[in-house]
Amino acid sequence: MPVDLSLNTGLAVKKAIELADQGSSTIHLFHTARSRTAAMNGFIDEHFRLQQLKKHIEKELPGTTATISINSTSSVENAIAQKAIELKPELIIIAKHSNKKLFAFRKIISSGSLAKRTRCAVLTAKPGSLDSKIKSIVIPVQSRVPRRKLELLAYLAWKKNTTVYLVSMLNRLKRFDDYDSSVSHTLVETYRLLKDGANCQIFHRLVSGSNIARTALQFAESVDADVLLVNPDELNISSLARLDITDMLMCNSKLQLLTIAPGKINV
Image 1 (cartoon, rainbow, N blue to C red):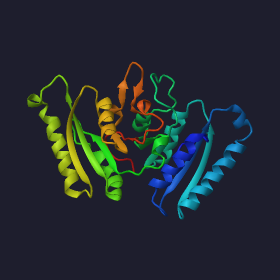
Image 2 (cartoon, rainbow, N blue to C red):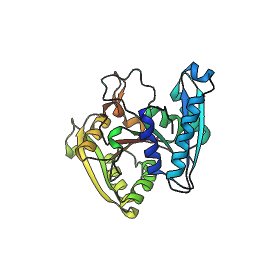
Image 3 (cartoon, rainbow, N blue to C red):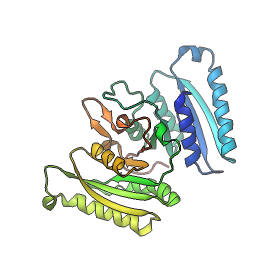
Image 4 (tube, rainbow, N blue to C red):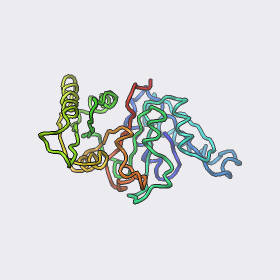
């Protein structure tokens, strides 16, 4: 869990406590400082504040271990990626207070990039999700069965008894009667795999659109979903402005973004 010791930190800590298994989890608190002054002073203040967070987490989750790590870097995302590759965590939690953007050229952390580089799942949350429980999850389904998404969903849905929406996109330029049969088949196959063993309500929807990220986001907001589960290639809203789904969420949005790269699970 990267912590910047700003307003984001309280949200990240609460999400970590909410998702961790009591008594069997390890929560890594990782602070990257871009301040030379802090580094020169030996991170005294940062270390004290992280120790307080560690005590709070271990008090809230008896039996859970919290660790602390601090470094100085010019690239926060590179530091997080390197730490995640070293630790191989099941989840990276990113809290963001920033509001909806029109351009994102100076983005410090990209959820999609982190997911690709580390092969870890990345949860991005904004303040609106502070007290929300995971009751509904939206999963975009394209031409291949999203097996890694389903493996991650196993923890979220089976534990929480959620409602799951499987969503495939129909290009606005096509008619339903000449729709790509491979996408339709994948949607049905994904539904079948979930239905066979999932303790959750499952719905599948075919919706029109030309951009999978924008279409999935609009659908998730229309059903008041708590989580949108995507892979990095389903994040991009605008290449020109470097906008992705996280940039389109307002601070008060309860929708959390869970990004995971396709392929084998990193264990």
